[in-house]
Length: 255
View 1 (spheres, rainbow, N blue to C red):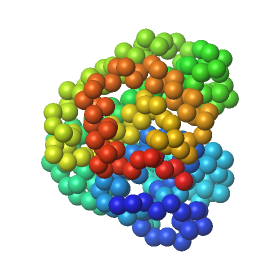
View 2: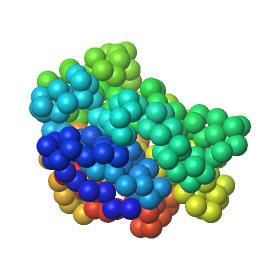
View 3: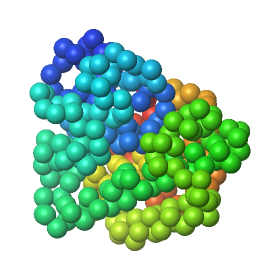
View 4: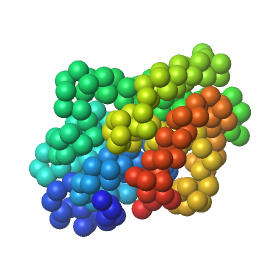
């Protein structure tokens, strides 16, 4: 399924599913949300949201984060678990197991990737850490780093060594879980979508990967790549390559 990118005025008038995503950065949370609908072959429109979009915030009732998924007249879904749950309901048996124990296992590994303290979260902490350690020369610019530090619970006690050990443990657990072509066996699951998109910040994000990503954020993501890329198992890199060659669009479109 190819997603349709629309402006706010168009989205207001649409029914079905609308996905509000980041317009300036290949945020793994946003890209995973879009990827679920692509791989599940579910129709949706994408509303790119800029860094300063008060009109979008008003439309969403004050929500200032991304992604946000709106489906029909239902509540806004603003976290990975709710978004995965919606896709599981709309496309049963496609990306999420129907067996309760298997579903619980998948959700646990998804939390390891996208949850608080997970791979994406720790990568973001690494970017913030690089910002403060270099006085803004690496990672995010200092104003952005200070803003994100509050959102991600950044502590000055964090060390690069500690961040690396956390990510190495997460990657090792994911590698051990991957026993077939995909985490879903012979076909992709929600976990495959999330691992593929959450490894993007650990790659070189040039124009062949995401031409619309703004340069300061490419620079910020490089801090996570420099710290963690060498620790990604080859099997996980191969999974990411397979997902983007066969299931997810590349280059990544933001708007």
